[in-house]
Length: 162
Ligand code: SF4
Ligand code: SF4
Image 1 (tube, protein in one colour):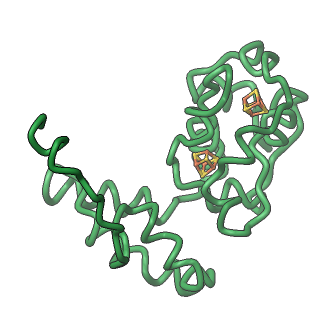
Image 2 (cartoon, rainbow, N blue to C red):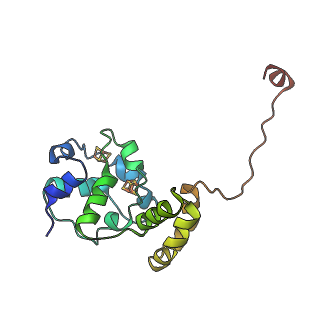
């Protein structure tokens, strides 16, 4: 059984901090996982925590959150949702394959080495059917697929000024 207040504390929050949530769902609209077509709603998670309701390991956000912080960046209150997710994983004894890979990379190279993280996550990605999202993931990893870039027509006058 989870101790919700302890979990919130573990994430460095107080329960009152969650009461500021406006319910605007901006977090859901920018969520990376939602963008992949997996139905997640960070605001719903906050509401459950605030009401002291249990969150189980099958909640998609707990399983798939990538800790990208897009939700925090867009939230008017900058609520640190991924830290709550990590605290919940800790309390549910769930290891995220991404976090394990990040830590492994830090142990070996002292930095996050993306190809290593990707390779270590492949079994999980295959098992969970993530591979169909690979094209989208390449955008998030800033590995953009080759595409034509429109040439700018800079006039001679502008060239002279630069
Ligand atoms: S940190 Fe997690 S909840 Fe927030 S946008 Fe990224 S995947 Fe979604
Ligand atoms: S963006 Fe922030 S204030 Fe809006 S619903 Fe999400 S957590 Fe609440």
